[in-house]
Image (cartoon, rainbow, N blue to C red; front, side):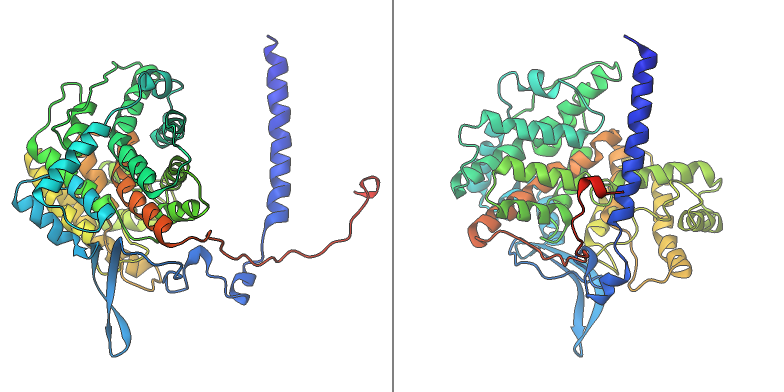
Length: 459
């Protein structure tokens, strides 16, 4: 092999791509003033952040304000699954000492809370589906392991299409069966994908632990992930609550909207779920919790006194001025597209995170997170013009929770997916049952008509 020739070829190709990219950028830019002129709501949001109404759903509801004298007044955020306040749902199963994720899956899919008998039957159904085709782990998951687990899961999901004799059947019964199977195997695809990467790329020991049918989703995740299969009851219960809080969040989030858009085309379940995974992978959607942990890692090494609020404020200002961490000008974990006064998910999760911090002797870090949660909205209000309040979102505490559980950052977004597949499935079913039309948003062309030029005359 001629190494120099190959290097020259790659350099030439790289230069050509760079030149073509410059041409692409030059000829694809749209005058920003045209968006205002034609009243285009970029990101399907108006200037005040309110979303454009594109559909109806009975799966969940987000409330962030109340009407007073005909005006919308911001309030503490509330989240409802099928009409039930998420805080009441969590209080219910926590009071009984039960794991709640499987119950929430049932509620989201079927619109009602299960009886004890229905719950036991449903858990048995999920446990029966919690298995992969013969040799699938060897032939698919362990081949070409990727550092990005979201791509690994998406590839596995698309490959499962090939193992399904009714893959293209979009009858309600078949789609429900497919959704339940995917809900059941997402933990396996995620954890096994990580172990394959950790072994073949990092050279670490390989662990493939089978799930146990009598365990909850949260328990099985920790059991399959850890070499010794051990975990405390509190660890599993807190992870279970995190899964419940991530399971659904309205039809307007990017990955759920993607699910509904792709579903409306009449495509198969595996393609719809793979599209949702690709959306969730984006750092603007599902990857924010890892960003929070990275930001705090730098904060902890930069701020000498974690109790000095002035020193913390200085670091937060540096973040906003693009002088710290990734220079993006953001305080990760703060603010939400919908909530302003508070994110109910962050409020609930914070209490459970504190309990785990006590058990794991991590209260110094928890107190630091709490100080940042208090100070960040103040600093943002001082430094930026904002149209609504800013509060901690669920990503602010979920990354810290995962780090206390010893979970690798590669699995942070997959854990989001393990939970959100429940919501995606409910929305896919709802779209198939009710819509009947392909979703086709309008785009206004601003292209200028041009006369054709013969090839020999082009310059």
